[in-house]
Image 1 (cartoon, rainbow, N blue to C red):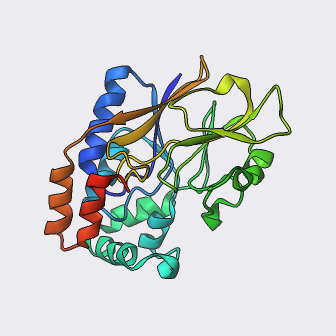
Image 2: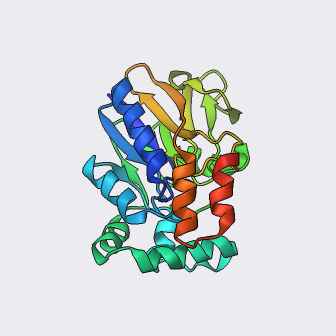
Length: 244
C-alpha cells in the first residue's frame, strides 16, 4: 500500500493540483491529509471539493475548526484571523458541515493521522523539539503517525536500536522500518515554511516502510494573484514565493 500524505493545503488549489498530479504519476493507493484544508488561501471550497473527489482521509486542523466556529481564533495572528473571517464568508453550508464532521484523529491500516500531535490533538500543540513529540510517541497505537501544523518536514523517531532516545532527521528519505515509533511531519502543500517554496507532500510505502518527502513546483503567481484579488492580506501572497 502506497499512501500520499498531504499537509496543510490552506486553500491553495494550484499547489494541490500539482501535488495530486505528482502523486498519480508515481502511483499511490490512498490519499491522507493532516488537516488545515482551509485558511490563508483564496480557494477554500475548491480545495474541499478536490479532497472529497479523491476520497481523502482528512483530520481537522486548527484553521478548519476556526472556520466552523469550533475554535476561537483569538490566538491567531491578525492576518490568519482575517483569512478565517473571509473564508467563513465564502464557504457553503455543505462545506461547513464537511469540515465540522472531520475527526481529530484518523486511522488506516498502516498509520495514524493527526494535525499537530496524536496526544491531545484538540489542543493543536506544535512539535518544535523532540520532547514535544514524546507524549504522542508514548501513546500512538501504531508505529507511524503523520502530522503537520508547523509546515516544516521532519521525522521524529525512536529507533529500535535505542528506543529510550528520541531523535530526529530532516532527511527527505527515511526508513521507518528502523523505528519503533515515528512521528512524521510531511510539511505543507499550500504554504511551506522551510524556505523552499515548492509544495511538499509525503509518499509512504507501507511495504518497504520508506517515507519520501517530495517537492513539487507549482504556479505560485496564479495563487498569489488569487489571494490579492480576494482582498486578503498582501503578505499571504508574498510569503508563497519565499517559502516562509
